[in-house]
Length: 93
Image (cartoon, rainbow, N blue to C red; front, side, top):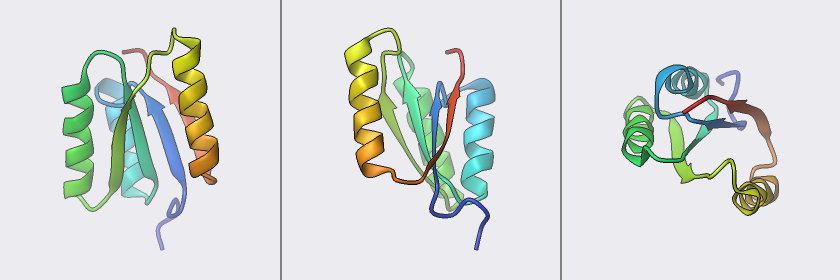
C-alpha cells in the first residue's frame, strides 16, 4: 500500500510549475489529485493525463479563486465527497 492511498490532495494551479511537480509526486505516493485551473485548462488536463498514464488518479476543475461563490462551491463539493482531503496547496498561476 502506498503512503497516501485513500487520500485526496487539492492543488490550485496544479497544471504548471511547482504545482505540477507536487501533484505528480503526491499521485506517485497514492493520493488522488484534484488540480484546479483558472485560465490554462490544457496544461491541467495534460498533467491529469500524465498522472493517469503513470498509474495515478487525477482530475481537473475550474476554480476562480477571486470569486467567493466559486470557492464555496468547490469547498462544499470536496467536503461532501472527499472525506480524506489532506492537502490544500495554493500555487500562483
